[in-house]
Length: 253
Image: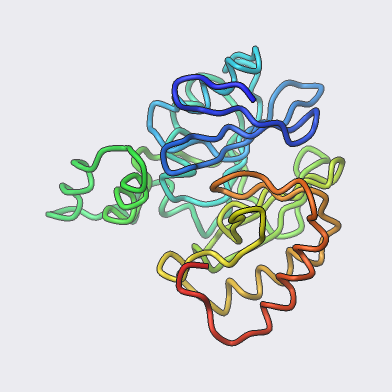
């Protein structure tokens, strides 16, 4: 494990790396391929510092990034996307139902909009900054609008996982069996869990999304927070599958 400016670099496979920001234990990911680097999510600050620090630890430059895959619009996952696009010229992918939030068509004015701009990009506050404004901090257009079942770059299968947000998607990296789950589910203490109820927009839709994920031939789970799950994955998937049958959604996941 390497560290730089509060960011931990964690290996998932020899091609997949986790950029774990200690603030709000927020995770973005880098996948190394023949063309350079694919990023999954873009970090929690508008200056993209967590991702830029992670790239530096991998001895990679922003210019090496050719694709940015975004799971959803929340600032703790997408705040750095516009900056990274500017630095790299990478192709940005997200789901059409997230476009109003990414392009700030949904952005609130008035007091809530003003308050959002005063919230620092630190820890859990970064999430509330976006929720107050109902949009990402900086508008970012998509080069590609993904749909369920798409295969991006011949590697990443798009899995529609609405519930946490309307157009949330996960990306399943077929060559390695890595599931980039975003906030469709959580990993807590080495166990798969539901996302917390207060940040899950539509509980039953989110439950159906998790059901789709547990059917995949997953070898590693890369969530949006805490740390990747690399051991006992099949056991945890089967356990989550059983718990999904319960009617009550846990308050804290």
